[in-house]
Length: 325
Image 1: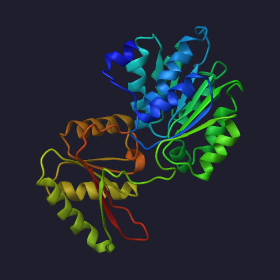
Image 2 (image 1 turned 45 degrees about the horizontal axis):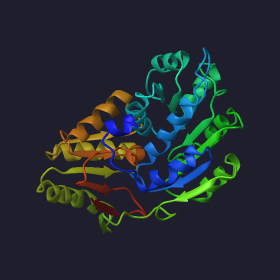
Image 3 (image 1 turned 120 degrees about the vertical axis):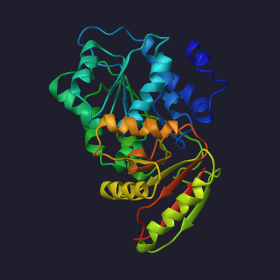
Image 4 (image 1 turned 90 degrees about the horizontal axis):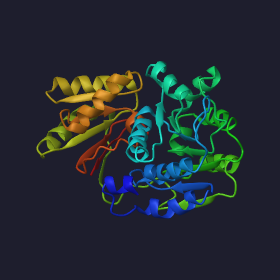
């Protein structure tokens, strides 16, 4: 409660109000709600309560709570929430992801942390090397489960879950409820409660104006340039341009910078330091245009309600979609 007061929370979101009693009751949970609805605190707060009611860690013990996330950026954002609320309860955490040096991450795991926030690949590396183990893990969270399955992480998720004790509590959080997520839930959750806020399918937020412009491939560059000119006349705007491939990200970034726009890019081939710098510059507004692959698709917490989102990759070979927040 001290952590909640310190962060200035007046009331829980819908997913938190419905999800907390289920999670705090020790039950398995599948929670479906749109991105940005407060899901992270929905599982962090029960995790902290769960941890402080367990025996303290001994030397060589692995984490009590494991949170799996699809991307480095989302994992780091989860860690920010864990830091805010874990500090008052003396609950330690670490964030484990690829693209960053293994040394500091390994040191945190060996020293002992109650919460491990991880992307699947790097966690498997540490488990195989014996850097950590999941023998004490009794609280498992799969965040953005649909996204992880889309990215092909199912084999890694299954390998990790097989190493966790059977008396675990499992919470699966997702924006959609496709058959692949249902299959994973049936395999690894027992007698779970299914909580849904909003639609079961990935649908548009009704607060967003959407403009769909169907065009030929050769028209895209000119239409994008005109769109940026139009957006540029408005004050304090941020624009995200989503692109299908890493090469196209670099090409578009180079082209719009040549035309005088302040733009930065982010994709999976950039190292962690670059990715962190780009997101910080974009969040602060110093670089108002971000060109990205789907590594930036969810969970960035941009903190600015006036943000333009442009989809610039091909669906049936041609389209440009703008979502205007």
